[in-house]
Image 1 (tube, rainbow, N blue to C red):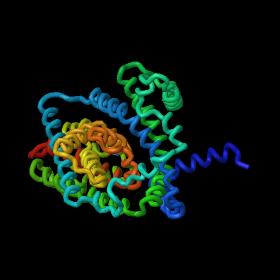
Image 2: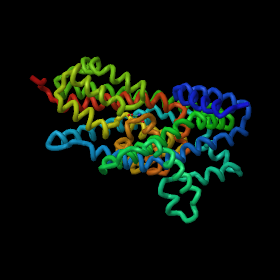
Image 3: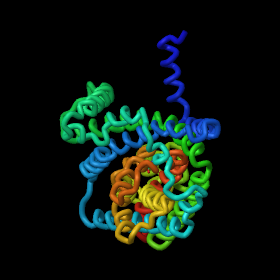
Image 4: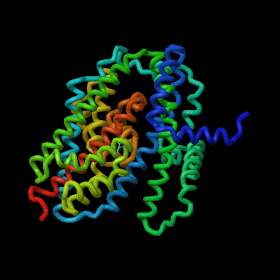
Length: 407
Ligand code: ASP
């Protein structure tokens, strides 16, 4: 017999296991199940669809609140601020262009052996008994309030926020800043719940893809993985060059100085959690002025996610390649534009880039279903792009510090 305590400890154990281990186990089980069930495994893709729909629903308010909070908290002023904005924008654009160039050259989306467009989603186009459940899950947080009769959606949102806000019950809200903080924090709590079920989604999705299409898409995914790492490495070299040319600090000394912050970014997947350490190392180990370190690592870090921008643009192009679509120049421009915005709106927490990516996909009418495919490798790429996000903050700080060392 199972007692409630048993199930509680099961949930606790599930949550205590690092996400990447849960995902690796999910991938392995998914492959085995897909091989065993064959085409029948297509019904298992439902959890992945559910997770994506939820991610898509929390993305717009998450971006909105993250930007509002960052702007409210930033102490900006004068010429330094203008220089900061210019640096952030150029670095992000360079990141996206590197990403697009690499994905255009390597074309990982064409590495698949499956026919383009033979999506697992389409294989399940026939009657799906679970679609009823799927339909009651809101696609956006405001949708249910405007659609007549979407009572289920409203209840869904009420339950989620009711539970999430229990943790903030006694939190004092005296200023508008407090209000935004509580709203953003409760959304992040909800996001963590969604991320908790990602391994289940990964399991179902992998089983369904392997069962229906075989391993073709995973070969392409491997190509995409290599492409993203290549692009991130190039972006790293770009940073080193910028530091060498635009600041008194030496790139190798800078990297050695902030090594711990880069490691922390990689191990936590959160540039925000790393922020205080980045700042401290820039001051103590690299020797930057207080103002440059705080502008780049504390203020800039809220807006500056070059690794995320690069990743989102590459993902859109990769999926387009996978589907055999050629994005027009106008669409590629939209990808660049929305990737910049989505990266600004990505909070510096694990997997935030995956959430805001839904916006990039929607802007160019790419099916967001395919983001599910990326769930299988995102845990690792997230860590790598977080390290690059932090390196971006470090670079901006060094450039703001100029060519003459303090004192
Ligand atoms: N995890 C990243 C960060 O904290 C954001 C992302 O998911 O791209 O910087």
